[in-house]
Image 1 (spheres, rainbow, N blue to C red):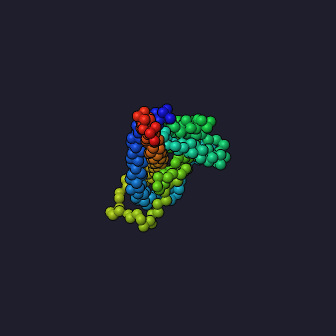
Image 2: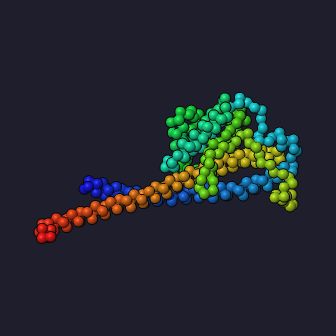
Image 3: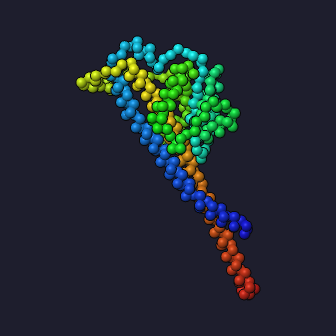
Length: 298
């Protein structure tokens, strides 16, 4: 019983030391989670501004020109498909990467793709894919800050667009965990390229033409293309934000559960320690009583 008492005391000390760390990690995860959600919300007016610009540009374009350049068109190439899987750089997020990898593998098998490559973002995801014997053609770690900026996302998507137009691949899919209400997330697939530009009607009631009408001196078709490039970049950036929010919400819940479990273990160990202390006190009192002859008189 003495050894059990010493073990319980040691465990209690260890858990009480770890508990503040769990609380701190939970707070950090919550902060990163809400920061990603705030940036996602900020992307709404950003894209609405592009909608307004696109609305004005389309008024100066021929429908045939728009159709020809829809989604940055080109003739099909070799039929190669790129599948980019966005996971986590850090751990302590449960089965976040494992479930993502399993869902992605199931999706690939369901598509019967003859020619494809898997790209991966996030060191923890890359290790998970390697354990599952999934060949990774391109590996990219997440930056130290945990998230690319919009300008970095734009540069990245421009590089992909250049490869796409050079016939390096024909399709580009992104697999990731998409944040939902309540901090939950689901596996999601986004078809990035060829990109389907948003349908902005020139008669839309929600978008009013400015007055006086803007003077467009640049080539409207070139402006249209630049807007689509920004739509591609913003789509990718929103995916990164959603993935980051999902990762940190998963880590937050895991730290919260760990903290609650630590509380339960502390209560159990405290009960064991107090019970042992009472037993020792009772035993010492009985020994004193026996030594003074009190027990014999009874």
